[in-house]
Length: 270
Image (tube, rainbow, N blue to C red; front, side):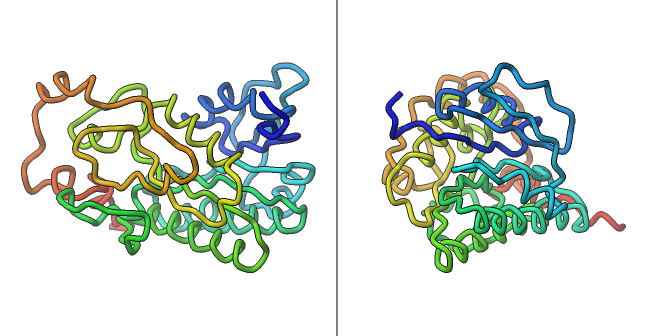
């Protein structure tokens, strides 16, 4: 690992979540110290190269203390499924504002923001999108990620904080259904994309699709290629198994919209 490809202290939020646990292991080579944060309990620090700090993103002072001393942030923290707006507001909207305010105050100049395909979830599966496609969020969660993308753009234009927004598709060990044959992002490709986002020079404000090299792509890979990302994995290896599964009805959200079942979640007060 060269000096240029090592951060002094890298903050990973959402470290207790599914992808947070994956990246906790895979990001260690990229930082002398990996600071791990979540509001949920985490495994204790494993050696002097790890720091563990419990933090609720809705607590502005706690987030400020969390960011102090870091030179880059991988932000996975927040709610990752569709939930009532009040829950999304605190974790995903207020929380990402607190994070960028802390980054501004402490001079952090590179953020990798875990956005989501649900920012564009109401596009149909027959449409092919690039990173400039207008937002069409499929729920409160998607709205919060659209807000995060716009907020990060503002903090770049105003304060020069560079951000790579990764619109993560579906990152699991294997695709689980027909939709995921298009949206799957392997753990290896996720790690490589985060590495590229951390160390590519002069990214400005970039939006890239977090997806492996799957057949029948819905999303243009050009923005990822511009920061050096070349996916190595493909859902094609799993296609025969998935094709043997029952397909959803032709008019079901999972068969019509890129966001799948998120397009039909809620309303929660009924």
